[in-house]
Amino acid sequence: MALEDAPITLATTDDPTAWARALTSPHNVFQTWEYCSALQHSYAQKIHLIEIRSPTSSILCTYYERTKDGEHYDICSPYGYGGLHLSGDRSELASLSNELVKFFKKQEYVALFQMGQQVEASTPNFIRPHRSSYILDISNIEETWRRMNKNYRNEVNQFRNNSSLKFVIDKQLLKEPFKELYYQTLKRVNANSSYHFSKETLDQILDSDVSMLAGVEDSGTIEIVDLFLCKGGHAEYFLNASSVHGRAYAKPLIWNAAETLSDLSFSTLHLGGGVKENDSLSDFKRRFGSAPIQIAVWKEVIQPKTYDKLCRQYQVKDSKSQRYFPAYWG
Image (cartoon, rainbow, N blue to C red; front, side, top):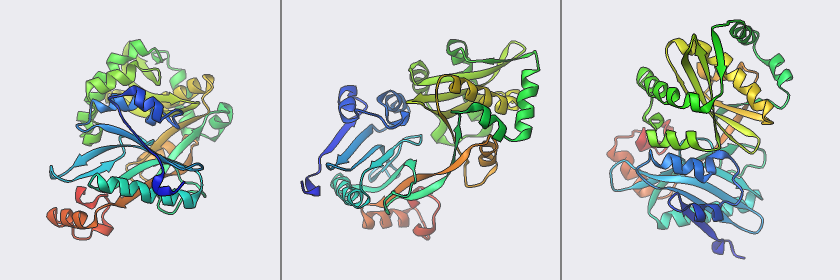
């Protein structure tokens, strides 16, 4: 089979049957229809699933369209770490990527930004490391406890010795406090718009089988709740919601949730990364005893002339040195 004849499968969140046909085995929770259809309530444009494959290799990604000027569109991974997955031979993946870019060019997209799986030795050259993220091995929770920062262990022990504090994992009890605290948190920290999920998105995620809530009750009041996503033995620390007072319980809450997930036979907990490399949030996650990984990112200018035009329109002085991609979004 010639690579230019490689089959391309496309589905949207409108059709769960087509999504299931296109994705017979999700590589992570972020590729599931349950997750993407929930996220769809917070996106103006449709979330797509696309796969191009040869007999030995495949590129799969989820994406949505976005526009800055109302006329030209680029494509981007939805929120989360699961938009992109590659498998197979490096050279064949490079050829498949060229065919996929040709397909996107026919759709008149300007640029492509995809973020997904961990960078490995076999990762093809068109993929670059994004920034560090942190994975907690919870398959042997006793060993993980020993690796955790001593001050963190002390905080967990103090939490457990405080009779006014209670660790809670009852989803029905935590759903409404989570939503209330989440929107309070967004306002308090002046969060980026990417975190402003609609009530419909949160409700659908919370009602799905892939979500777990864990919280802390202080003297009868829920002060902090974390939302985890769970699939195939792997869990994701997804969203945090807390009162000002509840922030003090962030470390004990994550640790107690990690123990709960371990008891449920989950082997890893992905804590995510920082806002930028080696910032205080990265350090916070690293001290749990987690191991750093590099998240893969695929950045591609599909239509260079239009890309340069948009950079000039939005007064980008040096598009190659910009932190953001596409640069005109900076």
